[in-house]
Every structure is written in C-alpha cells, then in structure tokens.
Length: 340
Image 1 (cartoon, rainbow, N blue to C red):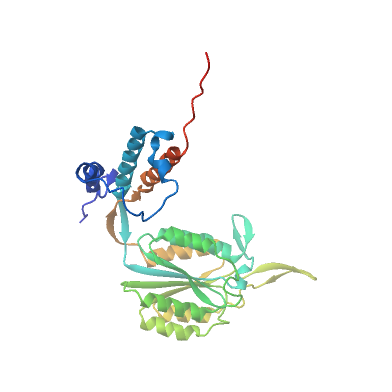
Image 2: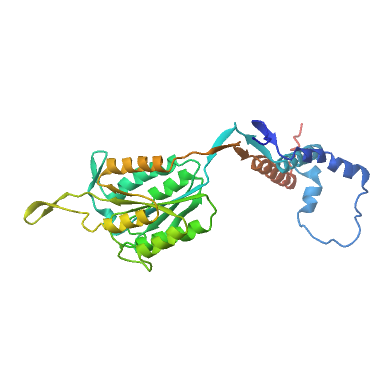
C-alpha cells in the first residue's frame, strides 16, 4: 500500500508559515513605539547612518519595500520549498550482502586480460564486481577490503552506486601486502551479527592463502556458520603465465599460492559454493551465477525524490538585506550648483 505523498512539482512543506506574512504590519499597527530614553544596551557606531536614510542612497519608501521583500523571502525559506519528482519504486529484499575483496600485493599480478590489454587481477575484479554490486538493487550491500588487515570500506547500504565507486577507488597494498582471510571473515561476521536481516551473505574473493591476521580462516568459518552467514568464495588468478627472464621466456603458474582447499572448506561449511576465476570472462560468469543463487526478488516500495530548495530564497534574502544596509550607509551624491 502506497502512503500519501505530495504531488510532483513545486511544493511547500510548511505552507502555513506564510500566514505570518502580515506580522510586521500588525506589530507596527498595534504595538507602541519603543522609548528613545534610557541607556542603550548595545551601541552600534553606524546605526545613525542607517536610521537617517534620507542622507543615503536608500530612501525610506524603497527601504521599506526591500525590508518587506526580505521578510517574504525568509518566510518562503522557512516554509521549506521543495521540488518533488515522479514516483519511483525501490526494491527491498531484506538481504544483507557483504563483498570481501583481497587487495594484497599478489593482486598486482598481471595475468588477466581486459579490453585486449594485460592488466592486474584487481583491475578485473573492480570491473566485474563493480557491475555485480550495481545489479544488487534492493539488497543492502557492504564492502570489506583486506590485506594484512581487514577493514570495512563501506557499511551496509542500499546505495550500491557509491559502494561500486569506493571499490573502484581501492588500491593494492592499502591494507598491507599479505593476506588475512580469517580476519576478513571475522569482520564480516561482526558486522552482519548487528543486523536482523533474514538473509546474510558474504562473497569473499582472494588470490592466495591466509598469511596474516589474528584469526584462522576455518576458525572464523565456524563463527560464521553459527551466525547463519552463507559464504561464497572465489579464487582469482590464471593457471599459466608467460614470463621473461635471463634464459628467455617460460611458462609459470601464477596461482601456485592459491589455497583452494581452504576456500572450498569455507564455502561447504557455511552452505555456500566455491568458484574458480582464471580470467575476466570466467569471473563475469561467476557473478552471473551468484545472481542466480541469490536472486533479487523483492517487494516494491514507492518513493518520490525530494530536493530541498530553501537555500535559494534564504540566500536572496541575505543578499538583499546586505545590499540595503550598505546602500543606506553610503552617502548620496551631492548636487552641483551651476552658476547662470
């Protein structure tokens, strides 16, 4: 059921404040003038110049008109003018999805091809995982980056676009050169434990083995299983890579350090699945499979985007008041007497 919403277009949230428009006239009409005798509480050195408007550029009738316009603009700003957009539907699934991405030194290995160019592993992850994140409309998505340490780059949010941007801005070695898989899982468990979502998922992507951190991966996996966190693990890296050395070119396995047994055990213990991504195309297919395993099926929540516009009349009122004050203070030009 859609709740009552303001119609599209210009709208005043607190339009009743405009009823105060005649308040200055009523105060002048019914209240007696303040006594001019007595000690002044505040001395303003230039007040006489403003009060004696006959000597300045701003004459009394014009000054009163400007003051009235400033009062109108202030009331208009207080009434909260808004521009209300058309109705948009926001899918809501009740799923919390964390993406844990390895940014250790080994992710700089250039054994991937993207757009016909050889790039490092993280560049491919940014491209494919970023698109995956933006497809998760309706999920609350968060981002964990880990190297020697694990830290939360983006808390759980419906703003998938910002999460994808922050992933794209990540840099290799930012969290250290080693790999703390256990700490990344532990941090995910800690963050997801605080939320009451019906479905909690972690997608963990790495190209190596656990070489750092305070918690071992399988120990952290037990915590995750008890909390009902489902983990999908992805091993990244090519099986063959041509390298040049003193004796010429030779084939090596750049993924020799990938601990597939541990990644499979993590996925199996938590009810997830393990995937192997040897190139960009395989990684893209894996994220398509994840979309099928964790489909975005949701209810629809209707909203209207609202842009607040109060700062426009507020700024105009301030500018007019300042201009009127300066004009009243500035002496008017004297007329020259020409002899005839």
